[in-house]
Image: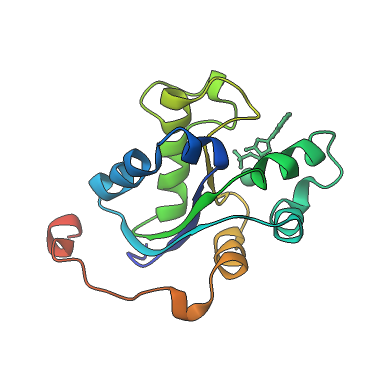
Amino acid sequence: MSEHERTFVMVKPDGVQRGLIGDIVSRFEDRGLKMVGGKFMQIDQELAEEHYGEHADKPFFDGLVDFITSGPVFAMVWEGQDATRQVRNMMGETDPAESAPGTIRGDYGLDLGRNVIHGSDHEDEGANEREIELFFDEDELVDWDQIDSSWLYE
Ligand code: DAT
Ligand code: MG
């Protein structure tokens, strides 16, 4: 399993408005993951429709696109062993109401349409790479050595 697996993560507009960026970043730092990209931005209609393309035929699609474009987001790339699956575990379930306390959605959300955070789906092969490419140019990602890496990995 590679220590260099990268995954795409985003604090959604509700998380930004509620001042949760710092807490969410801290959780991933505390876990030992390494941030290799971060961008505070507003998503336009075109990017939203592409990012959520898999849901285009769902009844909630228009509301989802309206929501994700409604205010700034904080897009990130995190790197580490099994990063995609571990981030998903830390996020909880899609529905905050079904998410265990201690997970991000379980601690900060109540409603399915306001679930605070996005992370690439670990069950969708290549979703992490596709989403990273959609949001970041290659030169916006930083290769760097974490001083504690030998204490995080055997
Ligand atoms: P996840 O964000 O956990 O990967 P997903 O990819 O199935 O979940 O759906 C993307 C987003 O769409 C999800 O974060 C919230 C919203 N969503 C999903 N299912 C929904 C539903 N049944 N009603 C309203 N919004 C929904
Ligand atoms: Mg998804």
